[in-house]
Image (cartoon, rainbow, N blue to C red; front, side, top):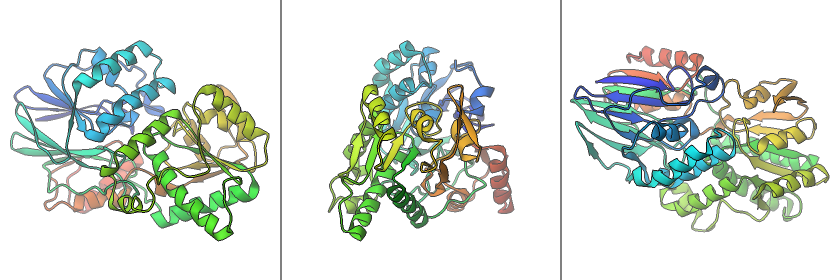
Length: 442
């Protein structure tokens, strides 16, 4: 067999990998969009590789850097089955609608054609259930990255190949922890944070609470760029608990003291789906459901709908003295409604910008996070006087130790590891750690 990379190998985004068997059959794992500096290196989104022999597409999860080129794949002639977990099948159409709305692609006709056909191609399957194809079989396992995410185990030609997709950090609320494979002859392993360690959950919650209390005291605006799917729901879950604690400590309701605004209609729809998919939540969240049937909704939460409401909310916040917390996409500030909030409030000293996820190289989010005095948004420079925070503990990605634990948790060490989905330094650091444990990495 042969492993061919069509994206996500030399950079972090654009994940697309093809496993080719000796009998001519192959499967494609993910088909994602390039972002940031990766997009500058790969400006052509059309599919340039041959589709001959590709029996199926297997999806690890629905983040845009793993599924964003699906419309281009179908436009190139792919009409095979698309296998994924059941939550992923529910979420995928909304993700592609979002890609169109926030400007990842302007080819509306192609997206509409994709949305009309995707239901016929999707093959939702249960975690742990073997699926048979010509010359191989595969199954999905919980990856703990976002709801529905999976690492994929493939058996073919007497070998076991594992694609990690994006692995999540353990102990995240709502999500079940990923478990290690029994073993693998070949492990294709993500390395996004291969050189970093995240802060623990207790510390991240403590730091978020400090920022929220500062917002209340300063009567400023806290802006949290967050992906509509996954990070937003996790933030709502934890903010619900934090605000309850603040109310208990202060002995008064926060109803008229702070606005919490989710400015993303899609995030609201994702949150509804998250509520529907409660059977896939982890044990902690299941326990919370015994005394709070809506842990993602609280009394001072407002969801913004159409664009007119978005514009009026912006003007409302500009001309008032009460504090507000705004969660809006996109997560890397490359487009979407968060950009308008940044334009309006970045120059204010009482503004806090809180990054809770990975900021791709070359994105506005990375530039703001990097401590620059100004950032270019839509062709114009905006001074940065806001306080900028990075809460790595809210990352949906496993850190270096989590990745090592995933590998070392196998009953047998992998025969070979291929590192993908990481910047050069992250890959190099993780490679050194794995090699020091006697594992072959290429």
